[in-house]
Image 1 (cartoon, one colour):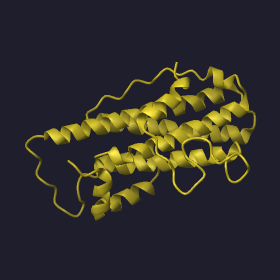
Image 2 (cartoon, helix red, strand yellow):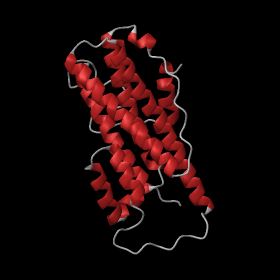
Image 3 (cartoon, rainbow, N blue to C red):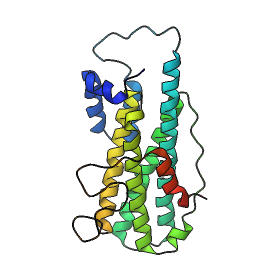
Image 4 (cartoon, one colour):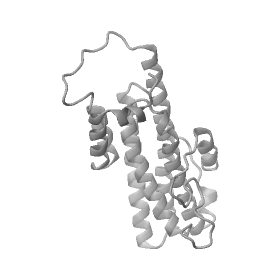
Length: 231
């Protein structure tokens, strides 16, 4: 399997139809459910099952599972971060607390969706990492909000960095649906902490610059950036 899932999405009208349907659906969990249910072209009879998986198919599946577990690690981190912030009581503004709860709930939905998808593909979900947000929480509210923006920027850049490596076009479509949510979280937090938009701060700090195109980040760089939050 030499073509990436991006190429398959571009060439296959039925895939594009499912892709846009998933992006307009009721969230990441439903997107993943649709992705797993949508096997093949809806307008064509189901193909006979192959006698055995090829070596390339196995490698592609393993590659996608590695990416999904990588994404799951980041989603664990994000969900735990928001839980820790809310539990600490450091945020006093009810509106900001409400935002944190909504973001945290969304990240937990991502965790649940990724976990279910990995199992459906025959893989084993990675264990939840031990986290340590104490040093960040000790620095006060401004540091906490900046850390939240950093984490969301990293999450968006991480998904973008893996888009071209995902082989299963349905997994790709669902991953992009999550990426768009991470990017919205990042944008909201960037505004909240006053980054970019010509305010003299030199553009957005983090993986997504203040410009027309987001910058992808590779797996090694992202994991190095979140290492301070891991126990």
